[in-house]
Length: 447
Ligand code: HEM
Image 1 (tube, protein in one colour):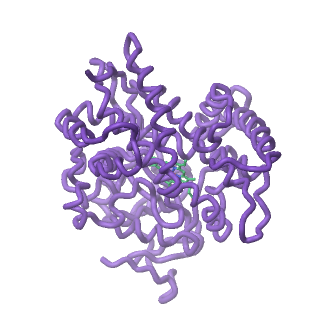
Image 2 (tube, rainbow, N blue to C red):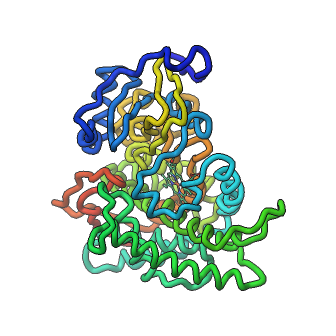
Image 3 (cartoon, rainbow, N blue to C red):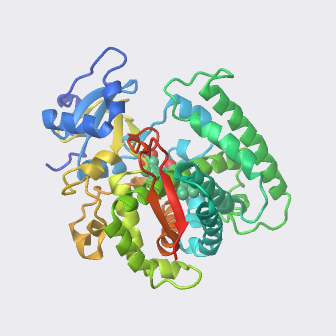
């Protein structure tokens, strides 16, 4: 069926609501949804078809499934849909950061930030990332015992993000990491209760500690006559079009968002890929062969000349998308495929469902050849969306791909890893898909 985008004629009230049910009073069908959003959606698709209504996370919600539906959602930003964050996340993110901006203000901020995240800017970061990654991997390989990958990867990704933002400036990494961990722990709690001993209360206290610290760093930078070529430098630059510079509060909010948005996402993608490779030795071997031609320090050109790295990263994020989905809310009554979606209803961007849908034969199989250049034509737009889409597509996608390609190339070239037997590798899905054991490895240098 072709999606019906035009909501002007006939009037939306002439169309029925999508099929579905609201579940229990207040709770709706939230518990089943939280257990597994994919199973939840698949069951209802079988019962009701690709568009259905429900009530989850405190809101009447319409699920739209299939690649065309994802395209319709991305095209609706600012027209009939807007971003929706939970009240807890809104309080923990700074009010002036990109994710909470809408309309023209959102586009304007993206224009300001975008040059720093272009593929070309990443060229200069490759050596910096390589040296940080090598330092951490060598430390992991020298551990006498086993490595728990998840916390180790969190430390590494945090240092990389700090380097992207602050360049060569010295910042107190342990202090920031401590408060960052407590802050992010509060972002997805089911009940955001602000008391000193609750996770959310501690997160708010750590938000303040981080803001005070970042504020001093930004003030010190503002006092300099010349800015280094890092992200903070570009946020501080006067804008060419005569617009006033961003306020210090706005810059601090933005820095905190970037630390958050760029951290657990890359940790999740790389850690899960390490696990997938440990379980698929034949794919690991092909990966090793693919990087064999890379000599000396890594370069962006060398990485680009190794397309299998991208295939591995893409297939890893298809099978286990780091972000399972996001929420939008309708800003007016709108019609999709013959059904009315009333104003104020939630509409999920179901990334996990898109990656497991009928566009992908045997969706649970890890097969990087799905992303081979020869099969490019078979891939449908909207079926692979780890970075979202439309005006809110991930700002850091190129940075993430370069960062993860460097890690992956070094892992494949120089290291070997085995899973410690007997660990619990079943997944916790919220907020990020993570095996319960944190992935315990015997990690060694090759050769
Ligand atoms: C594997 C790594 C990553 C994944 C899978 C990922 C995924 C996503 C997704 C799905 C969105 C869209 C959310 C929505 O539609 O509401 C998003 C937005 C965003 N991402 Fe990423 N991301 C990754 C890495 C990064 C990095 C490294 C940075 C920055 C350093 C970053 C910065 C952002 C920002 C600022 C936004 C908000 C964009 C906006 O609202 O306009 N991300 N990301």
